Image (cartoon, rainbow, N blue to C red; front, side, top):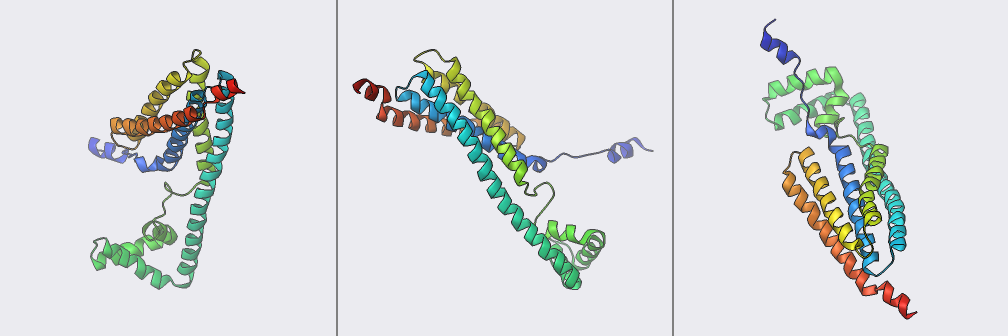
Length: 242
């Protein structure tokens, strides 16, 4: 066997779309965890609260945020999965009741994509003979195995990623010296967001620098807004007055 033929036979491709579903949920969860908990603890600290209250607020925020992320992601992706299942059921019924019309529909799809009518009809016939439902799912409905909705997986990934991201500002609170919680949390958060943004961009084939700057900017804006709110309430002075 020629060497080039042997290499071609063993050739396998890896595409970034294979990981788009879990990657989106994981990145969203991690960034939300970092930004939400960092903003929370920075806002509480800016209001003059002590380290114990700041830490307690962060832990409560992690629990509530993780549950919220899991529930929101599950409901959202479950709705998408329900729609997919309904479309697949309808397509299965139509293939059983109207096979000729479905074959013509598939042929028209391939013609619209640029194939000659005769070739489009041949392709439609061969794909229908091999896997009619799979052909219609992919080419008519746009549903592929890599992009199928998986609600439980998405919910678990979102919750786990949220907790993983939220641990960063929480650890920053634990390691910060007295009176420096805000500065340490802000620095750690910006570093973490830059890293997660760069990693997500790299995994998706985009510019890591652009991804890092984009996420870090919104994180800084969130913490700035939270700090402003904390200073407006100024918990420490209210406690002193009381």
